Image (cartoon, rainbow, N blue to C red):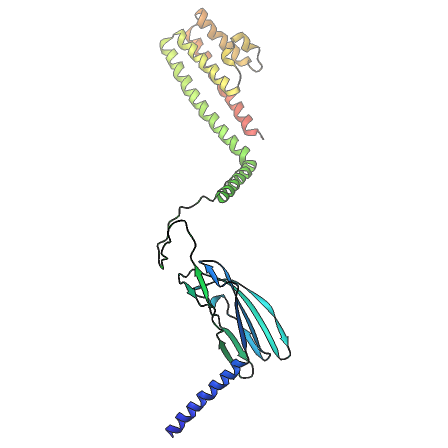
Length: 303
């Protein structure tokens, strides 16, 4: 019984082999190379043309099939052409290689599905020879290496990237300026006005204290000069170059003309100190009034 099973197995193998050979004989696979020699990395075209009975279905390998030494670039299909009970399919593969072998034997199989037997045939066409040439150099030939270290290349500056980034930042800043710029600038100006006024009040009070202690005309003159300089900076008018008579001609100066005249009489005519102190307090109140007026003007500005 065991001998019979062995004979049956051998008979089945022989029969299957003859069947496969018969099936292969019905399929004609042709291979074409557009080049018989290439340099390292140079693309070449590997063309397959399959002629088969119409009840078969041909499947060509896709990019996932290709491994070293062949490297996939792309493919081009041709439409199926049928005449009678035979059909022809064609495909062109764009490939390249970085193998350091002198000769390659590219061989891409074709898969054929038999609808009658529900079986798939795996057909390897005849191998083609592809020769790899060395490039001619001015120096002596270098030996090819299978493994080599990477050459570190410094990063290049992407001017387009940084240019677009700069333009984007400028665009955002422009939008912010148009939307919130006037408000921000008003707040900054108000802050500076407050800081400058506090500094002026501190310096003015200190100088008044010096005058109160020494009762000197020079100290009083410094108080008046400091007051005029602050108003000049606050309102943008040349108060430092104006005398009391000239300031009398300016609008909205009525409250300060009499104190200024009293101070002039002290400087040039000997006015008593208590009257001078009251006049200095009037200067201080006037500068506070002008500061509040300027502050309101800035706060209410629309531009």
